[in-house]
Amino acid sequence: MAILTINGLEKTFKHGSTEEKILKGIDLDLPEGEITALVGASGSGKSTLLTIVAGLQKSTKGEIFFADENLTSLNSNQVRNIRAKRFGFVFQQAHLVPFLTVQEQLGLMLDTAELKWSKEERRQEIKAILKKVDMWHHRDTYPDSLSGGEKQRVAIARAVIHQPEILFADEPTASLDSKRSKEVMELLTSLSKEFRITVLMVTHDESALKYADYTIEMKDGLIE
Ligand SMILES: Nc1ncnc2c1ncn2[C@@H]1O[C@H](COP(=O)(O)OP(=O)(O)OP(=O)(O)O)[C@@H](O)[C@H]1O
Ligand SMILES: [Mg+2]
Image 1: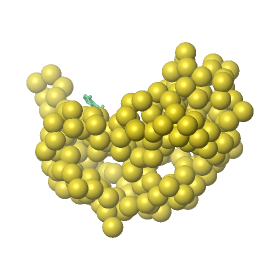
Image 2 (image 1 turned 90 degrees about the vertical axis):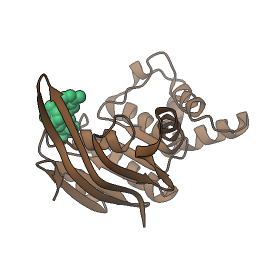
Image 3 (image 1 turned 135 degrees about the horizontal axis):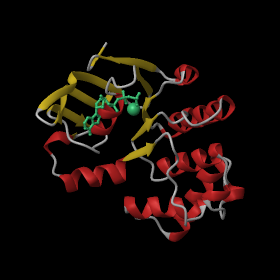
Image 4 (image 1 turned 60 degrees about the horizontal axis):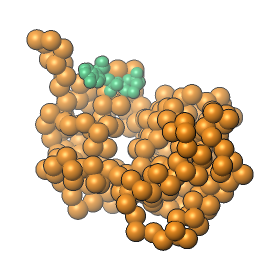
């Protein structure tokens, strides 16, 4: 079953007086609980599609249905609310907050998602996820002292601590070597399967594709 359905999605950017249509009528179903990889040439509109679907920018035309919501008909507060509570994000860089320890990064995410968890529940969940990504021993460490792969593991823990329904990942392994990429992909896959999180992942990394249940390609503003 599809957790997210996109119908006729278009995006046009204005460059001065000229307009460029980057997305030209995308139709897509994201199967629930599965990992879908989005590939395509640089500039083909992958990040644009991902950020629109994730509610980070608006489309020019078309509709996006997520679970029981028509995302395109919601106001910006309602979209922000869904984004904070029901979506998770991982990018090429970990984007950790420099002045927070590893476990504080996750606490901040829980505050943003406004989950009604007790202090004890928060502590338990943070501990469980940090153990899962093998970063519990670094719980009181600041990002400065972590390697690239370790930072990305914290970013993944932070992206799923609030138990989102969909995880959006834009080139999550692009800044890592092949060994760390493999670790990150194995982690994403096991989290997706264990917690039944749907994943939409943009990637240029051939080796990441074998972890995907489906691969779709963007070409000339359309999905092949
Ligand atoms: N805010 C914006 N304003 C104007 N043009 C934009 C904007 N965002 C993206 N574009 C243009 O849209 C096109 C698609 O960009 P996008 O970032 O979606 O590509 P991509 O497929 O993710 O590429 P890459 O693989 O290099 O990350 C590019 O030509 C880009 O210049
Ligand atoms: Mg991109």
